Length: 296
Image (cartoon, rainbow, N blue to C red; front, side, top):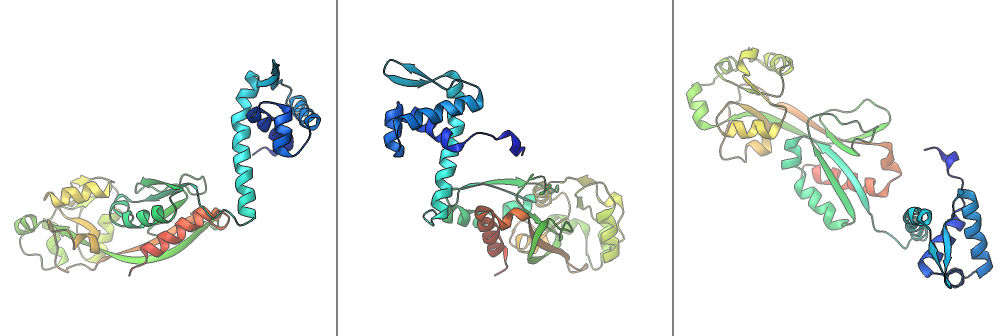
């Protein structure tokens, strides 16, 4: 923000706001515990500062000019903010209001967050929540999101992170699909299977090879970055899919494949930018997410 461009006096802006709401200098003076000449001088001084005419006399009263009408809503917002500052400073306002943007993967948004978000809304109905459901990393420093659920600890020193849980993911498939594959007694038997991939890179292939499954890219004929779409295709019998244990084991349409591979670790880090230390709204949401995500 270019602070040098903000060069007007708030008291003068307040005088204009109250004059507009009360309809005259004398009524504004009574509302502010001041005098009519003082209010008139403050409005005139604001006009001089801004270089525009803000009020005009109509009969025995005052009306805002077109320029005054353009400015008054901004000044009214300033008045509301000043009132909230005063209430907070005196301890009379404990409500939390405003927007918090949370980003997490599609499966986390669908299976982990709903009951936690319901509790946040119940405790703080003034907080609005934007949920960015994506596996793509959003830049917290650029405020593309306020809070992120990630499977790794960020290295950026400007970010604050807390590890909240350690999940496990297994491969799942429908009973009919597994029956078509035949017995799966080792990781090598997975070469007969088709798995659902997140992308066309070699990362998942290399990871599974290291776990004992000698797969190739031919084992991944379908790829989608949307984990919920993967899960839907898995439940429809199109192939095997990794899913968090508590979600997969609760889904009646699929079964976990035999323990021929170790589970895939899924650590969960709650991450935010440093504003968490200065925003009560952000701190409240961060803490409630951490509490709700902690395995019980």
